[in-house]
Image 1 (spheres, rainbow, N blue to C red):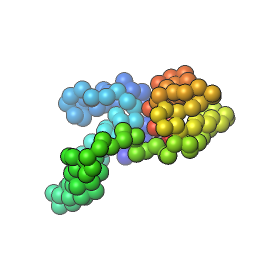
Image 2: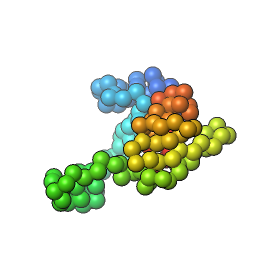
Image 3: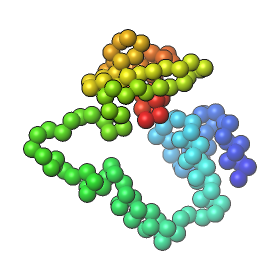
Image 4: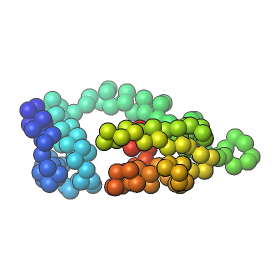
Length: 147
Protein backbone atom coordinates (compact mmCIF):
# COMPACT_ATOMS: atom_id res chain seq x y z
CA UNK A 1 0.00 0.00 0.00
CA UNK A 2 3.06 2.23 -0.17
CA UNK A 3 2.02 2.86 -3.79
CA UNK A 4 -1.16 4.54 -2.55
CA UNK A 5 0.79 6.91 -0.32
CA UNK A 6 3.31 7.67 -3.06
CA UNK A 7 0.42 8.57 -5.38
CA UNK A 8 -0.76 11.15 -2.83
CA UNK A 9 1.98 13.46 -4.12
CA UNK A 10 1.47 12.59 -7.79
CA UNK A 11 0.36 15.18 -10.31
CA UNK A 12 -3.16 15.20 -11.71
CA UNK A 13 -1.77 13.99 -15.04
CA UNK A 14 -0.06 11.01 -13.38
CA UNK A 15 -3.26 10.15 -11.52
CA UNK A 16 -5.28 10.43 -14.74
CA UNK A 17 -2.90 7.98 -16.39
CA UNK A 18 -3.03 5.55 -13.46
CA UNK A 19 -6.83 5.81 -13.41
CA UNK A 20 -6.99 4.90 -17.10
CA UNK A 21 -4.69 1.91 -16.51
CA UNK A 22 -6.82 0.62 -13.66
CA UNK A 23 -10.32 1.34 -14.98
CA UNK A 24 -9.72 1.11 -18.73
CA UNK A 25 -11.43 4.44 -19.40
CA UNK A 26 -10.90 8.16 -18.90
CA UNK A 27 -11.86 9.66 -15.56
CA UNK A 28 -14.94 11.89 -15.38
CA UNK A 29 -13.00 14.45 -13.32
CA UNK A 30 -9.45 15.72 -13.13
CA UNK A 31 -9.72 16.69 -9.45
CA UNK A 32 -6.60 15.34 -7.70
CA UNK A 33 -8.26 14.19 -4.49
CA UNK A 34 -11.07 12.45 -6.41
CA UNK A 35 -8.56 10.68 -8.66
CA UNK A 36 -6.34 9.65 -5.77
CA UNK A 37 -9.31 8.17 -3.88
CA UNK A 38 -10.57 6.26 -6.92
CA UNK A 39 -7.09 4.92 -7.74
CA UNK A 40 -6.48 4.00 -4.07
CA UNK A 41 -9.81 2.18 -3.89
CA UNK A 42 -9.07 0.19 -7.05
CA UNK A 43 -5.58 -0.74 -5.82
CA UNK A 44 -7.01 -1.90 -2.49
CA UNK A 45 -9.71 -3.82 -4.31
CA UNK A 46 -7.05 -5.61 -6.37
CA UNK A 47 -4.98 -6.35 -3.25
CA UNK A 48 -7.74 -7.44 -0.86
CA UNK A 49 -10.70 -8.25 -3.11
CA UNK A 50 -14.07 -6.58 -3.61
CA UNK A 51 -16.71 -6.07 -0.93
CA UNK A 52 -18.69 -9.19 -0.19
CA UNK A 53 -22.33 -9.35 -1.35
CA UNK A 54 -23.39 -9.27 2.32
CA UNK A 55 -21.53 -5.99 2.93
CA UNK A 56 -22.80 -4.48 -0.33
CA UNK A 57 -26.39 -5.34 0.63
CA UNK A 58 -25.91 -3.82 4.08
CA UNK A 59 -24.50 -0.61 2.55
CA UNK A 60 -27.43 -0.44 0.12
CA UNK A 61 -29.90 -0.87 3.00
CA UNK A 62 -28.20 1.86 5.03
CA UNK A 63 -28.25 4.24 2.07
CA UNK A 64 -31.92 3.55 1.42
CA UNK A 65 -32.76 4.16 5.08
CA UNK A 66 -30.56 7.16 5.91
CA UNK A 67 -29.79 8.99 2.64
CA UNK A 68 -31.64 12.31 3.04
CA UNK A 69 -31.21 13.30 -0.60
CA UNK A 70 -32.73 10.23 -2.18
CA UNK A 71 -34.96 9.04 0.65
CA UNK A 72 -38.58 9.77 -0.33
CA UNK A 73 -39.75 9.56 3.29
CA UNK A 74 -37.41 12.37 4.29
CA UNK A 75 -38.07 14.33 1.08
CA UNK A 76 -41.65 13.86 -0.11
CA UNK A 77 -42.65 14.72 -3.69
CA UNK A 78 -45.23 17.30 -2.64
CA UNK A 79 -45.02 19.79 0.22
CA UNK A 80 -47.28 19.10 3.19
CA UNK A 81 -48.60 22.70 3.11
CA UNK A 82 -50.41 24.47 0.32
CA UNK A 83 -48.18 27.58 0.26
CA UNK A 84 -44.73 27.40 -1.32
CA UNK A 85 -41.84 26.43 0.92
CA UNK A 86 -39.02 28.95 1.28
CA UNK A 87 -36.08 28.32 -1.01
CA UNK A 88 -33.66 29.02 1.87
CA UNK A 89 -30.87 26.46 1.93
CA UNK A 90 -30.98 24.29 5.04
CA UNK A 91 -27.20 24.54 5.44
CA UNK A 92 -27.46 28.24 6.22
CA UNK A 93 -27.91 29.55 9.74
CA UNK A 94 -30.85 31.85 10.48
CA UNK A 95 -30.75 35.43 9.16
CA UNK A 96 -28.76 37.73 11.40
CA UNK A 97 -26.11 35.11 12.15
CA UNK A 98 -22.49 36.03 11.56
CA UNK A 99 -20.33 33.46 9.77
CA UNK A 100 -16.63 33.80 10.48
CA UNK A 101 -13.74 32.37 8.50
CA UNK A 102 -10.00 32.54 9.08
CA UNK A 103 -8.08 32.58 5.83
CA UNK A 104 -4.38 33.34 5.40
CA UNK A 105 -3.99 34.77 8.91
CA UNK A 106 -6.97 37.11 8.50
CA UNK A 107 -10.46 36.80 9.94
CA UNK A 108 -13.46 37.45 7.71
CA UNK A 109 -17.04 37.91 8.84
CA UNK A 110 -20.20 37.53 6.76
CA UNK A 111 -23.70 38.31 8.00
CA UNK A 112 -26.54 36.08 6.81
CA UNK A 113 -29.47 38.14 5.54
CA UNK A 114 -33.02 37.12 4.64
CA UNK A 115 -32.02 37.22 0.96
CA UNK A 116 -28.28 37.23 0.53
CA UNK A 117 -25.23 38.04 2.60
CA UNK A 118 -23.45 41.15 3.83
CA UNK A 119 -19.69 41.32 3.65
CA UNK A 120 -17.44 44.35 3.94
CA UNK A 121 -20.45 46.69 3.81
CA UNK A 122 -21.78 45.23 0.55
CA UNK A 123 -24.64 42.84 -0.20
CA UNK A 124 -23.90 39.63 -2.12
CA UNK A 125 -26.31 37.04 -3.50
CA UNK A 126 -24.08 34.02 -2.84
CA UNK A 127 -21.39 32.85 -0.46
CA UNK A 128 -19.37 31.76 -3.49
CA UNK A 129 -19.10 35.37 -4.69
CA UNK A 130 -17.79 36.38 -1.28
CA UNK A 131 -15.30 33.51 -1.24
CA UNK A 132 -14.08 34.61 -4.68
CA UNK A 133 -13.71 38.20 -3.44
CA UNK A 134 -11.63 36.98 -0.47
CA UNK A 135 -9.44 34.42 -2.26
CA UNK A 136 -9.33 35.71 -5.82
CA UNK A 137 -10.38 32.30 -7.17
CA UNK A 138 -13.63 30.38 -7.46
CA UNK A 139 -14.74 28.47 -4.39
CA UNK A 140 -17.92 26.72 -3.41
CA UNK A 141 -19.13 29.14 -0.74
CA UNK A 142 -20.51 26.43 1.54
CA UNK A 143 -17.18 24.60 1.48
CA UNK A 144 -15.14 27.75 1.96
CA UNK A 145 -17.18 28.78 5.01
CA UNK A 146 -17.42 25.18 6.32
CA UNK A 147 -21.20 24.97 6.16
